[in-house]
Amino acid sequence: MEFSVKSGSPEKQRSACIVVGVFEPRRLSAIAEQLDEISEGYISNLLRRGDLEGKSGQMLLLHHVPNILSERVLLVGCGKERELDERQYRQIISKTINTLNETGSMEAVCFLSELHVKGRDTYWKVRQAVEATQDCLYSFDSLKTRKQEPRRPLRKIVFNVPTRKELPIGERAIAHGLAVSEGINTCKNVANMPPNICNPAYLAEQAKILENDYEKVSTEIIGEAQMQELGMGSYLAVGRGSQNESMMSIIKYQGGDDDSAPIVLVGKGLTFDSGGISIKPGEAMDEMKYDMGGAAGVLGAMHSLAELDLPINVIGVLAGCENMPGGNAYRPGDILTTMSGQTVEVLNTDAEGRLVLCDALTYVERFEPEAVVDVATLTGACVVALGKHATGLLSTHNPLAHELLNASDQSGDRAWRLPLWDEYQEQLESPFADFTNLGGRAAGTITAAAFLSRFTKKYHWAHLDIAGTAWRSGGKDKGSTGRPVSMLTQFLLNKSGVEQGE
View 1: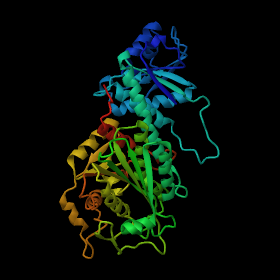
View 2: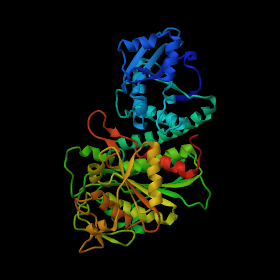
View 3: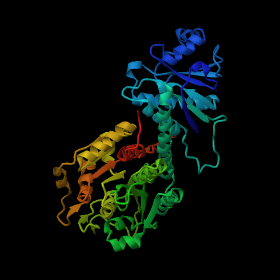
View 4: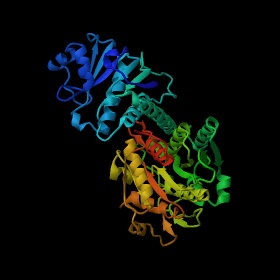
Protein backbone atom coordinates (compact mmCIF):
# COMPACT_ATOMS: atom_id res chain seq x y z
CA MET A 1 0.00 0.00 0.00
CA GLU A 2 1.39 3.39 -1.03
CA PHE A 3 0.59 6.58 0.88
CA SER A 4 1.33 10.21 0.06
CA VAL A 5 0.10 13.70 0.88
CA LYS A 6 -0.60 16.69 -1.29
CA SER A 7 -2.40 19.99 -1.15
CA GLY A 8 -4.69 20.62 -4.07
CA SER A 9 -8.18 21.56 -5.22
CA PRO A 10 -10.66 18.71 -5.64
CA GLU A 11 -11.66 19.72 -9.17
CA LYS A 12 -8.05 19.29 -10.37
CA GLN A 13 -7.67 15.72 -9.08
CA ARG A 14 -7.47 13.10 -11.79
CA SER A 15 -7.88 9.87 -9.86
CA ALA A 16 -9.90 6.66 -9.72
CA CYS A 17 -11.85 8.15 -6.82
CA ILE A 18 -12.17 11.33 -4.74
CA VAL A 19 -13.38 10.89 -1.15
CA VAL A 20 -15.26 13.75 0.53
CA GLY A 21 -17.44 14.08 3.63
CA VAL A 22 -21.12 14.89 4.13
CA PHE A 23 -22.53 15.84 7.53
CA GLU A 24 -26.00 15.40 9.00
CA PRO A 25 -28.53 16.47 7.93
CA ARG A 26 -27.40 16.44 4.27
CA ARG A 27 -24.78 19.16 4.86
CA LEU A 28 -21.83 19.23 2.50
CA SER A 29 -18.32 19.60 3.90
CA ALA A 30 -16.29 22.51 2.51
CA ILE A 31 -14.59 20.27 -0.07
CA ALA A 32 -17.88 18.64 -1.07
CA GLU A 33 -19.34 22.12 -1.60
CA GLN A 34 -16.53 22.91 -4.03
CA LEU A 35 -17.30 19.75 -5.98
CA ASP A 36 -20.99 20.60 -5.94
CA GLU A 37 -20.35 24.04 -7.45
CA ILE A 38 -18.13 22.58 -10.18
CA SER A 39 -20.73 19.90 -10.97
CA GLU A 40 -23.47 22.57 -11.08
CA GLY A 41 -25.44 21.24 -8.13
CA TYR A 42 -25.24 17.57 -9.09
CA ILE A 43 -24.31 16.41 -5.57
CA SER A 44 -26.76 18.64 -3.66
CA ASN A 45 -29.57 17.48 -5.95
CA LEU A 46 -28.85 13.87 -5.03
CA LEU A 47 -28.91 14.74 -1.34
CA ARG A 48 -32.23 16.56 -1.69
CA ARG A 49 -33.67 13.39 -3.23
CA GLY A 50 -32.66 11.52 -0.06
CA ASP A 51 -29.83 9.41 -1.51
CA LEU A 52 -27.61 10.21 1.51
CA GLU A 53 -28.52 11.61 4.92
CA GLY A 54 -24.94 12.06 6.17
CA LYS A 55 -25.17 9.68 9.11
CA SER A 56 -21.82 8.38 10.27
CA GLY A 57 -20.61 5.53 8.08
CA GLN A 58 -23.11 5.99 5.24
CA MET A 59 -21.53 5.68 1.78
CA LEU A 60 -22.66 6.80 -1.67
CA LEU A 61 -20.47 6.07 -4.70
CA LEU A 62 -21.01 8.34 -7.71
CA HIS A 63 -19.73 7.70 -11.25
CA HIS A 64 -19.00 10.30 -13.93
CA VAL A 65 -19.94 13.38 -11.91
CA PRO A 66 -20.28 16.33 -14.36
CA ASN A 67 -17.12 18.45 -14.81
CA ILE A 68 -15.10 16.28 -12.39
CA LEU A 69 -11.88 14.76 -13.75
CA SER A 70 -11.94 11.73 -11.44
CA GLU A 71 -13.81 8.59 -12.44
CA ARG A 72 -15.68 8.32 -9.14
CA VAL A 73 -16.67 10.43 -6.15
CA LEU A 74 -17.28 8.68 -2.82
CA LEU A 75 -19.52 10.61 -0.44
CA VAL A 76 -18.91 9.57 3.17
CA GLY A 77 -21.39 10.22 5.96
CA CYS A 78 -19.62 11.86 8.90
CA GLY A 79 -22.48 12.38 11.35
CA LYS A 80 -23.03 15.74 13.03
CA GLU A 81 -20.18 18.13 12.34
CA ARG A 82 -19.77 19.34 15.92
CA GLU A 83 -19.74 15.80 17.27
CA LEU A 84 -16.93 14.40 15.09
CA ASP A 85 -14.44 12.93 17.57
CA GLU A 86 -11.41 10.65 17.42
CA ARG A 87 -13.31 7.39 17.61
CA GLN A 88 -15.82 8.38 14.94
CA TYR A 89 -13.04 9.66 12.66
CA ARG A 90 -11.22 6.31 12.81
CA GLN A 91 -14.46 4.44 12.16
CA ILE A 92 -15.20 6.63 9.14
CA ILE A 93 -11.73 6.03 7.69
CA SER A 94 -12.06 2.26 8.20
CA LYS A 95 -15.48 2.13 6.53
CA THR A 96 -14.15 4.25 3.66
CA ILE A 97 -11.18 1.93 3.04
CA ASN A 98 -13.40 -1.16 3.08
CA THR A 99 -15.76 0.50 0.60
CA LEU A 100 -12.93 1.64 -1.72
CA ASN A 101 -11.48 -1.87 -1.69
CA GLU A 102 -14.78 -3.23 -3.01
CA THR A 103 -15.32 -0.63 -5.75
CA GLY A 104 -12.34 -1.54 -7.93
CA SER A 105 -10.73 1.85 -7.26
CA MET A 106 -7.03 1.04 -7.14
CA GLU A 107 -6.16 4.58 -6.05
CA ALA A 108 -7.97 7.42 -4.29
CA VAL A 109 -7.51 11.01 -3.14
CA CYS A 110 -8.96 11.36 0.34
CA PHE A 111 -10.12 14.75 1.66
CA LEU A 112 -11.37 13.34 4.99
CA SER A 113 -8.00 14.31 6.49
CA GLU A 114 -9.17 17.94 6.24
CA LEU A 115 -12.21 17.37 8.46
CA HIS A 116 -12.20 19.14 11.82
CA VAL A 117 -11.71 16.64 14.65
CA LYS A 118 -11.96 18.21 18.09
CA GLY A 119 -8.51 18.86 19.56
CA ARG A 120 -6.59 17.05 16.80
CA ASP A 121 -4.14 18.43 14.24
CA THR A 122 -3.15 17.41 10.71
CA TYR A 123 -0.38 15.09 11.96
CA TRP A 124 -2.84 13.14 14.10
CA LYS A 125 -5.49 12.90 11.38
CA VAL A 126 -3.09 11.68 8.68
CA ARG A 127 -1.28 9.25 10.97
CA GLN A 128 -4.53 7.80 12.31
CA ALA A 129 -5.81 7.44 8.76
CA VAL A 130 -2.68 5.48 7.78
CA GLU A 131 -2.95 3.20 10.82
CA ALA A 132 -6.70 2.64 10.30
CA THR A 133 -6.10 1.84 6.62
CA GLN A 134 -3.39 -0.70 7.37
CA ASP A 135 -5.57 -2.26 10.04
CA CYS A 136 -8.43 -2.67 7.54
CA LEU A 137 -6.22 -4.25 4.91
CA TYR A 138 -4.60 -6.76 7.29
CA SER A 139 -5.40 -10.44 6.91
CA PHE A 140 -3.78 -13.55 8.34
CA ASP A 141 -3.95 -16.13 5.57
CA SER A 142 -0.42 -17.53 5.48
CA LEU A 143 -1.70 -20.97 6.50
CA LYS A 144 -4.64 -21.05 4.07
CA THR A 145 -4.28 -23.05 0.88
CA ARG A 146 -6.89 -20.90 -0.89
CA LYS A 147 -6.47 -17.17 -0.54
CA GLN A 148 -9.22 -14.70 -1.41
CA GLU A 149 -8.11 -11.30 -2.66
CA PRO A 150 -10.12 -8.43 -4.16
CA ARG A 151 -9.99 -8.43 -7.94
CA ARG A 152 -8.77 -4.83 -8.06
CA PRO A 153 -7.54 -3.98 -4.54
CA LEU A 154 -6.76 -0.47 -3.35
CA ARG A 155 -3.05 0.18 -4.00
CA LYS A 156 -2.53 3.90 -3.43
CA ILE A 157 -4.15 6.58 -1.32
CA VAL A 158 -3.34 10.30 -1.22
CA PHE A 159 -4.36 12.35 1.81
CA ASN A 160 -5.04 16.00 1.13
CA VAL A 161 -3.89 18.67 3.60
CA PRO A 162 -5.26 22.24 3.67
CA THR A 163 -2.02 24.14 2.89
CA ARG A 164 1.35 23.44 1.30
CA LYS A 165 3.18 24.30 4.54
CA GLU A 166 1.51 21.26 6.13
CA LEU A 167 2.99 18.84 3.56
CA PRO A 168 6.10 18.06 5.68
CA ILE A 169 3.83 17.42 8.68
CA GLY A 170 1.71 15.06 6.60
CA GLU A 171 4.78 13.22 5.29
CA ARG A 172 6.08 12.78 8.84
CA ALA A 173 2.66 11.47 9.92
CA ILE A 174 2.71 8.89 7.11
CA ALA A 175 6.23 7.72 8.04
CA HIS A 176 5.26 7.37 11.70
CA GLY A 177 1.94 5.72 10.87
CA LEU A 178 3.63 3.17 8.62
CA ALA A 179 6.24 2.35 11.28
CA VAL A 180 3.56 1.84 13.93
CA SER A 181 1.53 -0.27 11.50
CA GLU A 182 4.52 -2.49 10.76
CA GLY A 183 4.88 -3.19 14.46
CA ILE A 184 1.15 -3.83 14.81
CA ASN A 185 1.25 -6.30 11.92
CA THR A 186 4.23 -8.08 13.46
CA CYS A 187 2.29 -8.37 16.71
CA LYS A 188 -0.79 -9.70 14.91
CA ASN A 189 1.14 -12.19 12.80
CA VAL A 190 2.95 -13.71 15.78
CA ALA A 191 -0.11 -13.73 18.04
CA ASN A 192 -2.36 -15.30 15.38
CA MET A 193 0.14 -18.08 14.69
CA PRO A 194 -1.10 -21.43 16.08
CA PRO A 195 0.62 -22.80 19.19
CA ASN A 196 1.99 -25.85 17.38
CA ILE A 197 4.14 -23.35 15.44
CA CYS A 198 4.44 -20.41 17.82
CA ASN A 199 6.26 -21.75 20.87
CA PRO A 200 9.02 -20.09 22.95
CA ALA A 201 11.65 -21.08 20.35
CA TYR A 202 9.53 -19.41 17.64
CA LEU A 203 9.42 -16.19 19.68
CA ALA A 204 13.21 -16.36 19.91
CA GLU A 205 13.42 -16.76 16.12
CA GLN A 206 11.32 -13.63 15.64
CA ALA A 207 13.65 -11.71 17.95
CA LYS A 208 16.60 -12.88 15.85
CA ILE A 209 14.87 -11.67 12.68
CA LEU A 210 14.79 -8.15 14.17
CA GLU A 211 18.50 -8.41 14.92
CA ASN A 212 19.20 -9.40 11.31
CA ASP A 213 17.05 -6.61 9.86
CA TYR A 214 18.24 -3.64 11.98
CA GLU A 215 21.78 -2.59 12.74
CA LYS A 216 20.93 -1.11 16.16
CA VAL A 217 19.24 -4.30 17.40
CA SER A 218 21.00 -7.19 19.14
CA THR A 219 19.45 -10.22 20.82
CA GLU A 220 20.29 -12.75 23.51
CA ILE A 221 18.34 -15.95 24.15
CA ILE A 222 18.26 -17.40 27.66
CA GLY A 223 17.28 -21.07 27.86
CA GLU A 224 16.39 -23.29 30.80
CA ALA A 225 19.99 -24.20 31.70
CA GLN A 226 20.90 -20.53 32.15
CA MET A 227 17.61 -19.86 33.97
CA GLN A 228 18.60 -22.62 36.41
CA GLU A 229 21.95 -20.93 37.03
CA LEU A 230 20.18 -17.60 37.57
CA GLY A 231 17.83 -19.14 40.13
CA MET A 232 14.64 -18.47 38.16
CA GLY A 233 12.72 -21.19 40.01
CA SER A 234 9.31 -19.62 39.50
CA TYR A 235 9.67 -19.16 35.71
CA LEU A 236 11.06 -22.71 35.30
CA ALA A 237 8.26 -24.28 37.34
CA VAL A 238 5.56 -22.99 34.99
CA GLY A 239 7.17 -24.57 31.93
CA ARG A 240 7.96 -27.94 33.57
CA GLY A 241 4.86 -29.71 32.24
CA SER A 242 5.63 -28.80 28.62
CA GLN A 243 7.94 -30.50 26.15
CA ASN A 244 8.71 -27.06 24.68
CA GLU A 245 11.68 -25.45 26.40
CA SER A 246 11.10 -22.10 28.10
CA MET A 247 13.12 -19.32 26.49
CA MET A 248 13.51 -15.68 27.42
CA SER A 249 14.46 -13.46 24.48
CA ILE A 250 16.29 -10.21 25.23
CA ILE A 251 16.09 -7.64 22.40
CA LYS A 252 18.39 -4.64 22.83
CA TYR A 253 17.91 -1.49 20.75
CA GLN A 254 20.79 0.97 21.07
CA GLY A 255 19.68 4.30 19.61
CA GLY A 256 20.91 6.59 22.40
CA ASP A 257 24.19 7.23 24.20
CA ASP A 258 26.00 4.25 25.71
CA ASP A 259 25.55 5.62 29.24
CA SER A 260 21.86 6.45 28.78
CA ALA A 261 19.60 4.30 30.98
CA PRO A 262 17.26 2.12 28.90
CA ILE A 263 13.51 1.80 29.00
CA VAL A 264 12.62 -1.87 29.45
CA LEU A 265 9.47 -3.52 28.08
CA VAL A 266 8.68 -7.00 29.44
CA GLY A 267 6.07 -9.15 27.65
CA LYS A 268 4.34 -12.22 29.04
CA GLY A 269 4.91 -14.93 26.42
CA LEU A 270 2.72 -17.91 27.36
CA THR A 271 2.51 -19.39 23.88
CA PHE A 272 -0.24 -21.68 25.12
CA ASP A 273 -1.93 -21.68 28.52
CA SER A 274 -3.91 -24.81 29.33
CA GLY A 275 -4.09 -23.72 32.96
CA GLY A 276 -1.75 -26.59 33.88
CA ILE A 277 -3.00 -28.92 36.64
CA SER A 278 -5.72 -26.30 37.37
CA ILE A 279 -6.88 -26.94 33.82
CA LYS A 280 -9.15 -24.47 32.04
CA PRO A 281 -12.62 -25.33 30.68
CA GLY A 282 -12.53 -26.62 27.10
CA GLU A 283 -14.71 -23.86 25.64
CA ALA A 284 -12.64 -21.30 23.72
CA MET A 285 -9.41 -22.84 24.99
CA ASP A 286 -8.03 -22.41 21.47
CA GLU A 287 -7.83 -18.70 22.24
CA MET A 288 -5.23 -19.39 24.90
CA LYS A 289 -2.68 -19.18 22.10
CA TYR A 290 -3.17 -15.44 22.64
CA ASP A 291 -1.73 -15.65 26.15
CA MET A 292 1.55 -14.52 24.60
CA GLY A 293 -0.12 -11.24 23.56
CA GLY A 294 2.19 -9.28 25.86
CA ALA A 295 5.32 -10.70 24.22
CA ALA A 296 3.79 -10.14 20.76
CA GLY A 297 3.04 -6.52 21.73
CA VAL A 298 6.60 -5.94 22.96
CA LEU A 299 8.03 -7.54 19.79
CA GLY A 300 5.78 -5.29 17.68
CA ALA A 301 6.79 -2.17 19.63
CA MET A 302 10.48 -3.05 19.19
CA HIS A 303 9.88 -3.44 15.43
CA SER A 304 8.18 -0.01 15.26
CA LEU A 305 10.96 1.52 17.35
CA ALA A 306 13.67 0.15 15.05
CA GLU A 307 11.77 1.31 11.98
CA LEU A 308 11.44 4.82 13.45
CA ASP A 309 15.17 4.80 14.35
CA LEU A 310 14.47 6.67 17.60
CA PRO A 311 17.42 8.17 19.54
CA ILE A 312 16.83 6.22 22.78
CA ASN A 313 17.87 2.92 24.35
CA VAL A 314 15.15 0.29 24.79
CA ILE A 315 15.27 -3.34 25.85
CA GLY A 316 12.41 -5.70 25.02
CA VAL A 317 12.04 -8.96 26.94
CA LEU A 318 9.88 -11.79 25.57
CA ALA A 319 9.21 -14.16 28.48
CA GLY A 320 8.44 -17.28 26.44
CA CYS A 321 6.91 -20.30 28.17
CA GLU A 322 4.14 -22.91 27.80
CA ASN A 323 1.84 -23.99 30.66
CA MET A 324 0.78 -27.63 30.26
CA PRO A 325 -0.40 -30.44 32.54
CA GLY A 326 1.89 -33.46 32.78
CA GLY A 327 3.71 -35.78 35.10
CA ASN A 328 6.36 -33.15 35.75
CA ALA A 329 4.00 -30.16 35.95
CA TYR A 330 3.99 -27.92 39.01
CA ARG A 331 1.03 -28.32 41.36
CA PRO A 332 -1.30 -26.34 43.61
CA GLY A 333 0.36 -26.41 47.01
CA ASP A 334 3.92 -26.21 45.65
CA ILE A 335 6.14 -23.51 47.13
CA LEU A 336 8.49 -21.90 44.61
CA THR A 337 11.65 -19.89 45.21
CA THR A 338 11.82 -16.94 42.83
CA MET A 339 14.98 -15.36 41.41
CA SER A 340 14.59 -12.58 44.01
CA GLY A 341 14.77 -15.17 46.81
CA GLN A 342 11.16 -14.61 47.85
CA THR A 343 8.97 -17.71 48.16
CA VAL A 344 5.52 -18.17 46.63
CA GLU A 345 2.81 -20.67 47.57
CA VAL A 346 0.98 -21.85 44.45
CA LEU A 347 -2.78 -21.87 45.00
CA ASN A 348 -3.71 -22.18 41.32
CA THR A 349 -1.45 -23.17 38.42
CA ASP A 350 -3.60 -21.06 36.08
CA ALA A 351 -2.25 -17.93 37.78
CA GLU A 352 1.02 -18.65 35.98
CA GLY A 353 1.75 -15.41 34.13
CA ARG A 354 2.79 -13.58 37.27
CA LEU A 355 5.12 -16.48 38.17
CA VAL A 356 6.93 -16.08 34.86
CA LEU A 357 6.93 -12.29 34.93
CA CYS A 358 8.22 -11.97 38.49
CA ASP A 359 11.52 -13.64 37.57
CA ALA A 360 11.77 -11.63 34.34
CA LEU A 361 11.18 -8.42 36.34
CA THR A 362 13.96 -9.40 38.75
CA TYR A 363 16.29 -10.22 35.84
CA VAL A 364 15.95 -6.75 34.29
CA GLU A 365 17.32 -5.04 37.43
CA ARG A 366 20.78 -5.60 35.92
CA PHE A 367 20.04 -3.04 33.18
CA GLU A 368 19.55 -0.21 35.74
CA PRO A 369 16.54 0.97 33.72
CA GLU A 370 14.99 4.41 33.55
CA ALA A 371 11.60 2.68 33.68
CA VAL A 372 10.09 -0.79 33.24
CA VAL A 373 6.70 -1.51 31.68
CA ASP A 374 5.39 -5.06 31.68
CA VAL A 375 2.65 -6.11 29.27
CA ALA A 376 0.51 -9.17 29.93
CA THR A 377 -2.78 -10.91 29.22
CA LEU A 378 -2.82 -11.43 32.96
CA THR A 379 -6.34 -11.60 34.39
CA GLY A 380 -9.87 -12.40 33.28
CA ALA A 381 -10.85 -9.98 36.04
CA CYS A 382 -9.59 -7.13 33.85
CA VAL A 383 -12.09 -8.10 31.15
CA VAL A 384 -14.85 -8.06 33.77
CA ALA A 385 -13.72 -4.64 35.01
CA LEU A 386 -13.01 -2.83 31.74
CA GLY A 387 -14.43 -5.03 28.98
CA LYS A 388 -12.68 -5.18 25.61
CA HIS A 389 -12.21 -1.44 25.26
CA ALA A 390 -9.51 -0.38 27.71
CA THR A 391 -6.21 -1.84 28.88
CA GLY A 392 -5.78 -1.91 32.64
CA LEU A 393 -2.89 0.26 33.87
CA LEU A 394 -1.38 -0.04 37.34
CA SER A 395 1.79 1.60 38.55
CA THR A 396 3.81 2.47 41.64
CA HIS A 397 5.15 5.63 39.95
CA ASN A 398 2.68 8.41 39.12
CA PRO A 399 4.78 10.22 36.46
CA LEU A 400 5.25 6.96 34.49
CA ALA A 401 1.53 6.18 34.75
CA HIS A 402 0.68 9.65 33.44
CA GLU A 403 3.10 9.26 30.53
CA LEU A 404 1.43 6.00 29.51
CA LEU A 405 -2.06 7.44 29.89
CA ASN A 406 -1.04 10.40 27.74
CA ALA A 407 0.34 8.02 25.09
CA SER A 408 -2.89 6.02 25.18
CA ASP A 409 -4.91 9.19 24.59
CA GLN A 410 -2.68 10.34 21.72
CA SER A 411 -2.71 6.96 20.01
CA GLY A 412 -6.35 6.11 20.61
CA ASP A 413 -5.14 2.84 22.19
CA ARG A 414 -7.02 3.37 25.42
CA ALA A 415 -5.87 2.55 28.94
CA TRP A 416 -7.50 3.14 32.32
CA ARG A 417 -5.65 3.35 35.62
CA LEU A 418 -6.67 1.17 38.55
CA PRO A 419 -5.51 1.71 42.16
CA LEU A 420 -2.60 -0.20 43.67
CA TRP A 421 -2.97 0.54 47.38
CA ASP A 422 -1.12 -1.38 50.09
CA GLU A 423 -4.42 -2.77 51.41
CA TYR A 424 -4.59 -5.14 48.43
CA GLN A 425 -1.32 -6.79 49.46
CA GLU A 426 -3.12 -8.36 52.44
CA GLN A 427 -5.03 -10.65 50.04
CA LEU A 428 -1.76 -12.37 49.10
CA GLU A 429 -0.81 -13.50 52.62
CA SER A 430 0.25 -17.15 53.01
CA PRO A 431 0.67 -19.26 56.16
CA PHE A 432 3.50 -21.26 54.53
CA ALA A 433 5.44 -18.95 52.17
CA ASP A 434 6.19 -15.25 51.84
CA PHE A 435 2.95 -14.88 49.87
CA THR A 436 0.60 -16.73 47.51
CA ASN A 437 0.14 -16.44 43.74
CA LEU A 438 -3.59 -15.74 44.07
CA GLY A 439 -5.52 -13.04 45.90
CA GLY A 440 -9.04 -14.44 45.54
CA ARG A 441 -11.94 -13.32 43.33
CA ALA A 442 -12.16 -9.74 44.62
CA ALA A 443 -10.03 -7.18 42.73
CA GLY A 444 -8.19 -9.92 40.82
CA THR A 445 -6.50 -7.52 38.40
CA ILE A 446 -5.20 -5.39 41.25
CA THR A 447 -3.93 -8.26 43.40
CA ALA A 448 -2.08 -9.69 40.37
CA ALA A 449 -0.34 -6.34 39.93
CA ALA A 450 0.24 -6.17 43.70
CA PHE A 451 2.05 -9.51 43.39
CA LEU A 452 4.28 -8.16 40.60
CA SER A 453 4.99 -4.94 42.50
CA ARG A 454 6.88 -6.98 45.11
CA PHE A 455 9.56 -7.60 42.47
CA THR A 456 9.91 -4.03 41.18
CA LYS A 457 11.25 -2.09 44.16
CA LYS A 458 14.50 -1.08 42.44
CA TYR A 459 13.04 0.90 39.53
CA HIS A 460 10.03 2.86 38.27
CA TRP A 461 7.44 0.35 37.06
CA ALA A 462 4.06 0.13 35.36
CA HIS A 463 1.92 -2.86 34.44
CA LEU A 464 -0.45 -3.13 31.45
CA ASP A 465 -3.11 -5.84 31.69
CA ILE A 466 -4.22 -6.46 28.08
CA ALA A 467 -6.41 -9.53 28.74
CA GLY A 468 -9.42 -7.70 27.30
CA THR A 469 -7.72 -5.80 24.48
CA ALA A 470 -5.13 -8.14 22.93
CA TRP A 471 -7.56 -10.12 20.76
CA ARG A 472 -11.12 -10.38 19.50
CA SER A 473 -13.00 -13.57 20.33
CA GLY A 474 -15.12 -15.91 18.25
CA GLY A 475 -16.51 -15.82 14.72
CA LYS A 476 -14.88 -14.68 11.50
CA ASP A 477 -13.46 -11.55 13.15
CA LYS A 478 -11.46 -13.54 15.73
CA GLY A 479 -7.84 -12.46 15.85
CA SER A 480 -5.16 -10.32 17.41
CA THR A 481 -5.88 -6.58 17.66
CA GLY A 482 -2.21 -5.58 17.64
CA ARG A 483 -2.67 -3.71 20.91
CA PRO A 484 -0.88 -2.16 22.76
CA VAL A 485 1.79 -1.57 20.08
CA SER A 486 0.37 1.84 19.19
CA MET A 487 0.36 3.01 22.83
CA LEU A 488 3.85 1.69 23.55
CA THR A 489 5.29 3.21 20.37
CA GLN A 490 3.68 6.55 21.17
CA PHE A 491 5.17 6.35 24.67
CA LEU A 492 8.62 5.76 23.15
CA LEU A 493 8.12 8.53 20.58
CA ASN A 494 7.31 10.94 23.40
CA LYS A 495 10.31 9.80 25.46
CA SER A 496 12.62 10.28 22.46
CA GLY A 497 11.62 13.91 21.91
CA VAL A 498 11.22 13.33 18.17
CA GLU A 499 9.08 15.99 16.48
CA GLN A 500 5.54 14.87 15.74
CA GLY A 501 2.69 17.33 15.25
CA GLU A 502 2.54 20.99 14.35
